[in-house]
Each structure stands twice: as C-alpha cells, then as structure tokens.
Length: 125
Image: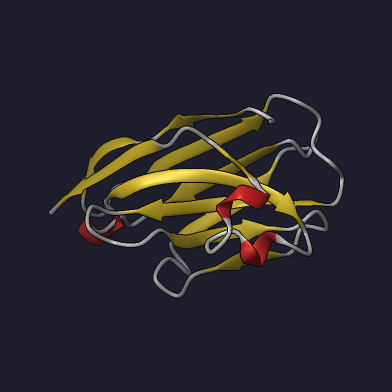
C-alpha cells in the first residue's frame, strides 16, 4: 500500500489559521484525486475538500470560503490551508487519495484508496 505522510495541524484559537500537508511516498498515478476528510469524536468521517488531477477543487459547504486545497507541482502532495477556524472544525484530519473516478466512493468504501495517519486539529472558542 502506498504510504501517505501528513504534517501540520495543532491547536489554535477560533479565528486563527492552520495548514496541513500530505505527501505520498510513492509516485501517485497522474489520474488520482487527493483530498482531506475529518472525523470528530462521536461523529462520522466527513469529506472536507478534494482536488482532482486536473486541478478541479471541491469543498464541503461547512468550509467553503475558509479552506483552500492545493496540490504540489509533483502531484503527489496535497495541502490544506485553513483560515477563520471555528470550534466545530475540531477533528482528526486525514488525507486521502483515489482514482479521479472513484474518489467519491471513499467515505463509504475507504479500502479503495490510500490514507494518511491522521493529524489532530483543535480549535478553542
């Protein structure tokens, strides 16, 4: 399985900013979508943002306008810039990768893709 290594995150007060990074240890297929999910205690894992191999980005309504997803020039790295953070953004964040055409299946079928180890983001009110 391809290793996905995350970095960033941490704790910040509401209104602050944090950045997340994720790099795939191996060269990722050029047609892979990469993105971020999060899971808060007692809640289901939810999709936060994703970016396809052609650069098309998608955001959940809860983070639209506050978070920005991007990919590195080598395509095997994905970043998440989080601004104006709210307490409800507190969660464990996971990067993920899957083929462009299969990424939408990841939440229900996580085994079809690759996942990072998780990074905690804590936002205090």
